[in-house]
Length: 74
Image (cartoon, rainbow, N blue to C red):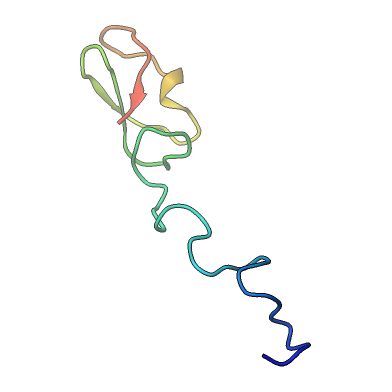
C-alpha cells in the first residue's frame, strides 16, 4: 500500500465494518415494554380482563375494571 493513502495499519481505528448497532430493524408495535406504540390492549395479570390501550396512558396506571389490579401491556 502506498504511504499516505489514508488507510492506516490493518485492524486499527474505527469503522471495522458490520456488527455496529443492535436489533434487526424491529418496529415499536406490540410487546409489553415502554414505547410499545398506541395500539393494543391492557391486560389484567390476575383475571385476564382486557381493555383497549389508550394512547398516552401507560397500562400500569390503569386499574382492572373487574378486580382492581394494575394492568399490563398485552
